[in-house]
Amino acid sequence: MAKRFGEGIILAFVLIWVAACGSGATSSGSRSGDEGDPPGKDYEYLHQHNAALLNGKTVRWPSTTITVSGATSGAWRRAIGRWPEVNFIFVETDAEIDLRYDHSDDWCGRADRRFDSSGMIYSCTVRISTRHERNGCGAEVDTVTHEVGHCIGFHGETHDGGVMDLTTAGSSEITTPVREMINLLYALPVGHDITSRLAN
Ligand SMILES: [Zn+2]
Image 1 (cartoon, rainbow, N blue to C red):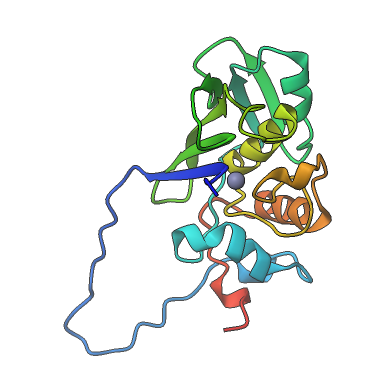
Image 2: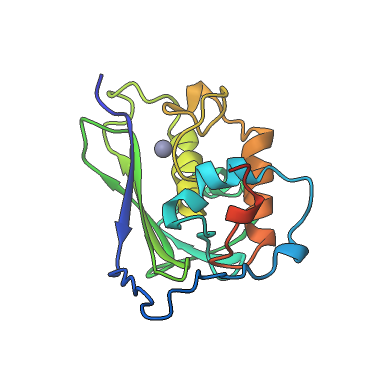
């Protein structure tokens, strides 16, 4: 079956890895900020669906207020507003998140995120297929919710019957693990290293 949702990830930078040579000492690289991390949260899930993108560091918008253009209908704006964890400001053009229709026989929607090596997302383009109905994609507004979920930092797809499933599972629901992950993500700084919170 054709892939019905696309999640394009564009790494718009060149990672430069610098090896420290000479002393022979083992690097003790301290991880900053661990004591301030909210306890009792599912850092494994956050890693799987976000920080895995950047070697265990959080990838998010620098602010919880994000501009959105191209959401011309009330239905699309409501679909985006299903994510109360961040605040969206709807503008005419040139926003941080831009939505548009695009022709595709292969996918229902796709989101192309751009983030830098510090973990800061700075742009996301959402495309909704003009052949949405013909492709058997379910409700268009659910696809809008799904793709904007990728834009604000949700990586990969779920298998829990919610809107972040591969085909939105015919659902409008943002499931609890997904909501809690987005809440945790935006409670932590950009590029925050969570690897010390993982089991291994
Ligand atoms: Zn997706």
